[in-house]
Image 1: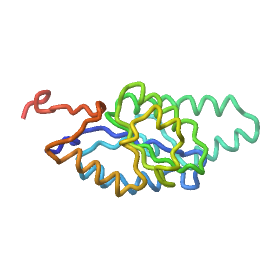
Image 2: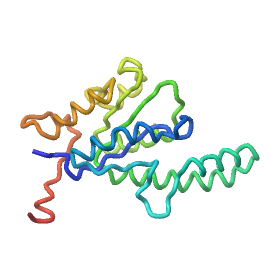
Image 3: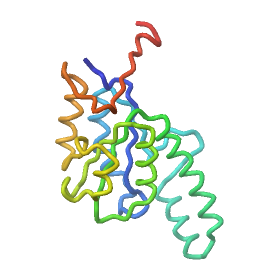
Length: 182
């Protein structure tokens, strides 16, 4: 089948308040997603021309906040938020990684923008599905909640390859042959 070929997936999770800047889990899942033919939109390695977010730029913003240079922080974060939300706009689905011990802000904003656009939002919670906040059960489809990446990988393989699938009124697959020809 290969339904997920060319499907653009945005990798959403914290970057600000996690030790590795959110890089580790994204690098770990990307090879699997690419093996399915998915196009990975990674905010840690933005494919948007002129938009860079790095450990160095993050440190500069932290220092600016300490100095009280909030204009600088606001300008920098405005550009970052714009780039990340644009990736949410153009993606076909979102992979949301939650660690409930981390405070999120932009992550939830991205999630609710994607939810308003009726995109599939696949949630993997480090602490298990039972630790996902109740609000998300009310606004997202809990059938897309997983307690591990392995469970999520199994689900994506099912969506990609199995003959019979439940789209959960979220998945929309594009026939690129009709657009670009064979």
